[in-house]
Length: 639
Image (cartoon, rainbow, N blue to C red):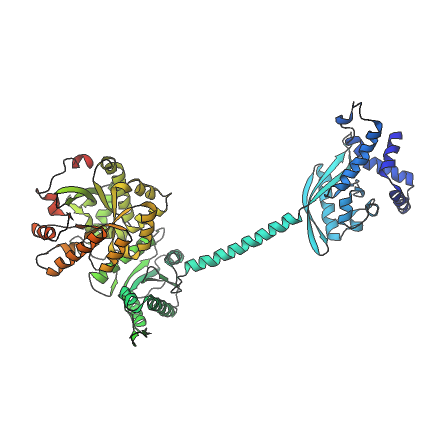
């Protein structure tokens, strides 16, 4: 008992002794009995802390220091900024450190002997008692976050409560240690608030990205999403109309009246079209798909031609003051539409579908010279002898059987009569086993969604069969990929992108006039990022102007232009063609662009091409003529 008296003299100072006397009266216990009870429950520290092996058999540690260590231990607890306390099994406080007392703005002696309910706010007391009971019942530490309100501010504490046991394994007290994590919680809340603000800003930015800044209608990406959602919600057999239109002579409008006036035209067209579409009791979307190209999708069974005629009236009713010329301008447009019917378990690649409509819109505008067309993707008859229905069956069979046959058409230097490379084309067989070449089925491949598969076959052929033979030669391959395949090069992780980049040093990628002009920025970015070589295919069909050729040359985007068949056939009969080709050749030389005459099919056209100074040519006559040096390695190059 003598040792315990020493501890008592350390643990109880005069102030605490006075408080114990008051408490003994309140509890109807004698001071000695109360102290004995407290000692039994609270002075486990002597048994558990100072019985540690570190304090045994240390001869040099004096008895005086052994006594002082207990005082120092208490002082250490009082100097830590973390609140620490000990409760008995009745959840009364038998010890608190200075940080705990200051937190609740009480003196230690005002807390000792009390429970949570006697001096804590009810809501705080409730959560404290609950976590105490958890620790005691589970006989293991409990971990919780407890909130204390002080001076109108919420303080957050990370609390660990641990039951303490005597040497016989009986619980005698519960130890609580807490750490103020208010700053951490507030920082976390501030971070969450900032994240929320960033999220809201991102949503607004996304909205801006989804809305065209000039016209206020959907961007191409948003329009595609709207169209996909519309199709997904449609019931089986329900009709959706997809309509594209572009403003006629828009380049001329910008050149004559200025870009600001051009933007005003686009904005007014979008506003009027959107207002007109709102008159239908149906889901719809209007989007700007290119510079002057718009798209409309509407989920309603109406006649496509009637929709087009109404849109013509709407757009022609627009009158904008030119100011500069004291007159009014009224825009005109070219339209193409198709009906889409929802089919169960059938997905549609709407990006390819839009590309198909764009191709047909260009042909309608510059070749057919008409202002509108309804395109039936299943029944539209091509200009060729075999109609699309039969051709589609042949194409399906060829793809299923793996009978798409790539072949090489030589491109020759007309000065040296030597081959500089080849264009890789494709062909399939008809029912009689005769070959049908690419120009006769390629447009159908676009419309039926097969073009992506054909592109993959062509890419595989170049990568696996041609490139290994060509990489050490002077030849190059001219490859005509669809735009939506070619532009996948920007997604470097994509397999198609990797295939394209693996053959780029021996390949010239062909792209149509319309796609070049519509995507100059994209082509410029691809050229700068990946150093691909491009050729304009079928130049001179009507989409481009000399000014466009100059711009492309100055931007160093195009390495070659290939003159279209419409320019290179019957050259002796049409003087204007010869003058136009001569002008193109002169400008191309200045810009460092090489000119190739394609589709040369007779000696007369070849003769004129040579007279005009065109250096390169390809076509059936070039391939079959004996006047050009044959390629002895062709069979080896392409097996």
